Length: 112
Length: 116
Image 1 (tube, one colour):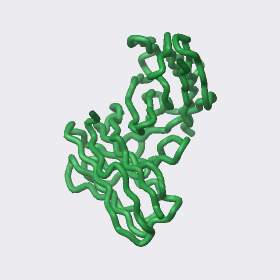
Image 2 (cartoon, chains in turn orange, yellow; image 1 turned 45 degrees about the vertical axis):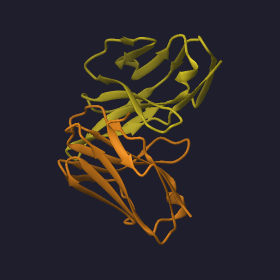
Image 3 (cartoon, rainbow over the protein chains, first blue to last red; image 1 turned 90 degrees about the vertical axis):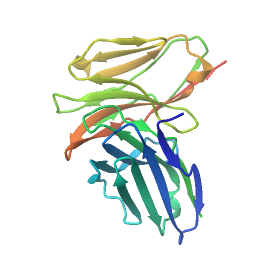
């Protein structure tokens, strides 16, 4: 079992839908991350929250909107996605000091 | 610029063979961290090891060992007596400090297939 929990595990949505991906950790980590991973590629960093504040946005389109309600939770709100946004979305957490990042199992997202 | 190169895209070995996965990195930082992760087909990235730039000691953990050489900017990973369960994609990563936090620079990964 991973210590970072992501829900849902699978999501199929239309291009006009609005949905949210959720991530939770209870390791006391103060940095949380969203990654996008396409097949046969490494994870690509999307966002980093450090002490509940957005510290890195890797020029992600506005149809992806992150939210960090508290130190244990990280959400990714999705709206008007495109077929090319179909991917595995991974959440990770760590202390913001170079410690290893711990990853969740990911959400497999398919856009119809 | 920070960069991680994993030149081996895919490696196939027969069970019980030893296999080495290569990782070469570039950085201008004097303090940095290097990592290896395993990604099985289920998708989760599993942390294997972290090395900081001041610690060049090699490490062994069971069948796994790591060889860190700053002189050649390499951080190679060897699996001894490979098993089918070792089949996965392995990523090497360099940690870069930016905007008050750290982010990973991943290599492109090496897919290891261990055949029974």
